[in-house]
Image (cartoon, rainbow, N blue to C red):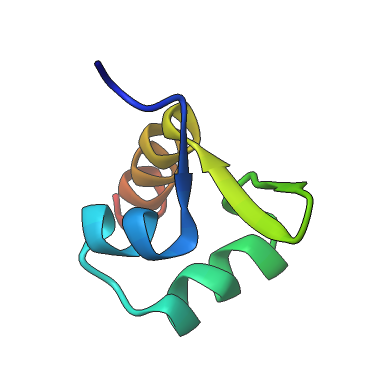
Length: 59
């Protein structure tokens, strides 16, 4: 079963970036996230959206 939302650590590992870089994407609005209690979670679909955005910017 695929997770609907990933922790910051899991999302950073999926993208192969540091936690700092992942938080930068969140701060700049490039990556959607939400808080569940004290945890920040990233929807799995938001990772695909970020990759698409970065590919468009690189083109």
